[in-house]
Image 1 (cartoon, rainbow, N blue to C red):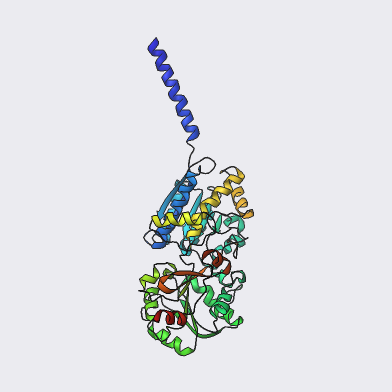
Image 2 (cartoon, rainbow, N blue to C red):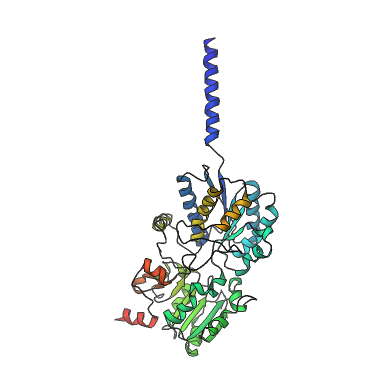
Length: 421
């Protein structure tokens, strides 16, 4: 009899412990990521999301629930991205999926629109510069309201709040410009314009900068010296090359030996944004500027600790790192405002109506679900490689003052003279 009582007590205790365990071991909130994991930017995005999710879990998770990150490799193949997206939404039941690349994100958004009524979820897209990506949100809101861009858009180049034109006119002092584009989909808006935007050439000319040389280049190009000879002969004083996939290491090495070596060279996007680019070119990148530079800008007290963790993972800061780090925190704050993870429509409305800030700038979204831009919202920082490979922030002034106060842009010919002494 005594044994029966003891056994009964043990069973009851086991049942109570199991019930308590289930009570506190809530199901995780799942976040998916579809990235090109063999590329530097894919690896960096993965590392950044891992840091963000780990920090959220250390802070108690979301609504008392742990966050789980599930990663899929799309290898820059759209069918693989679509298959991964379906898996993450249908099988893994991810509440939020991060997608990468304009082509992959566009395809996933189309699939997501069909899945959303039965499987409500969010899509946060980065590495998606194409301005038209979020047209669907404005044109078919009810169908695509789950899509948000946590990245910059090509249309930002036309935004006066970002003062990019002022950078050329007043910071560099450009009078005559050589304007070049790699022949890729992301440069199409700049080259062809649209109903809402002029071509970039027209925009420069409207602002009083003469286009002395204009060219569209193949991303497989390896011989740039003939191009630089033509630029030098054109009378241009500045070169603006929109290149993200071109071999800019080779390009810069040839520029530094060409007749155009004393012309200021500015880039948008690509490997030249990395701090290591200077050494990759053997120091020949002296004087070049790039948008989205790998420079630690102390937006908040959390910026520097994040950068330390990113370096420990041997990953670099890139343009998509900001959305990858802050994105899960936007989800956390929005869910905790509404107090539930079960109403995605309410979650979307909360993200639309509020502003969020964690590691970087203030995030707020417009009616297209694009991030608002211009200080204190998403900026377009520009950095310059100066003597010894020091990567210096030179634009915008508001961020220069908190990052490297007292530093200014130096024209390439002057930098060369200083280093030659």
